[in-house]
Image 1: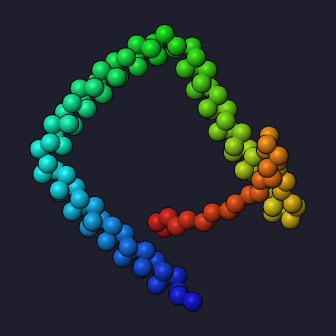
Image 2: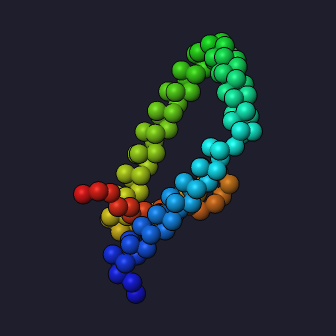
Image 3: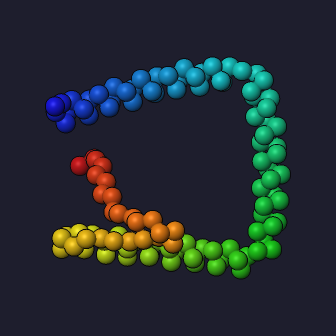
Length: 116
């Protein structure tokens, strides 16, 4: 089995190759005059779209506020659920959750690396 450092080094090599390929592609895209013309039209249409969205959202200000409040509630409930699941798992108890369609759900733990 490969060591953690070897696997990490391979990941870094793949990321470098991806970066080089992306740079080549972006250089080719930057050289296209047709693409620049289309992008100009897209900017104009996006500006018009934003104006229309702003006008519509102004009519639905109270609904947008309610939606924001619901988002905060959802994040709180998700945090509460995660904490409860972790507590049960640390106690060695089985975690059983069933969604509205009858599907059994099980927890998934994920580990990721961050700079120390």
